[in-house]
Length: 146
Image (cartoon, rainbow, N blue to C red; front, side, top):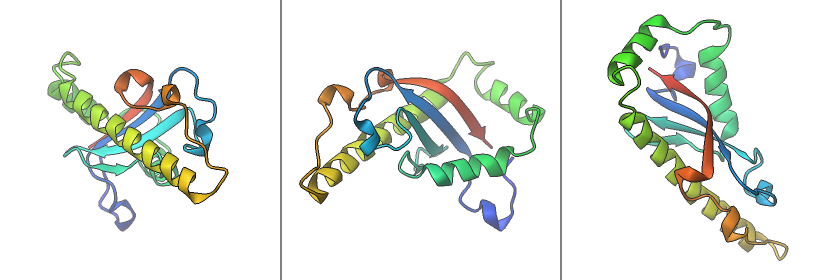
């Protein structure tokens, strides 16, 4: 559950995804310092609050919500089971995941072009190493925020 304290004002119901890019990702660390991992925080309404370009903010939220927690919140687990018909209907979270991946792809391209335009030593990433769809990732973990 999201506390009402002032330091939590950037936190709203949604999902924090940790994804790992599959395949050869060498050279992508100039675009994503956490390569091959991507963190994205998507609110329930589909707004991407923070994408992989802001890992510090995402990790801070994760820390605020999870530090000292050793067991899941039973009430939230029951709510999740009810919302997803015990995991058989994950369409809502699949839609949020698609928005997260679309945000990753868009931000990845922007950062790549920015690096290219910022200096003479800028290089484009090989097209095969760019991220563009959900099949480019493995889901490592996720945190549902209620």
